[in-house]
Length: 164
Image (cartoon, rainbow, N blue to C red; front, side, top):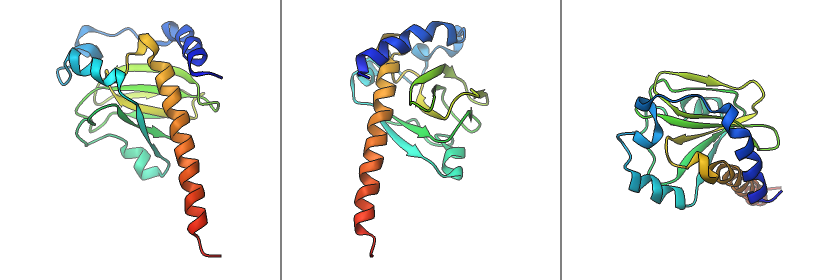
């Protein structure tokens, strides 16, 4: 499935799943990011760090400074996310087994929980890094595919280094 096509399908699913946001929690109005920074980040390449170990998934981005640029984490397996210990809001993208976005939680503030029982994994990004309404879901899906490819390639390289 092409990135453009998956982005269009994801866009069609988006409006029914986005929660109503109060102006205080809007990602575009986050005090940590200016509109120029959001626009620059939305054009840069989105990079995801896959986290599979329980302790790494539990921590996620909590207690860390906001990532610079378009960087996030891909938690797998994962169906629920907490923002305990966070200092900034998050955009969450819940993915199914086909790595397609099935739910978006935009601008989840600190000390909150979000879940999706049908999800297999979750992408955590600082709020406002991708423009959710203008192709951001397609960018997230493409970044997940890219992270999965890089992960498989890295595992194959590591397998070649294992003594036999």
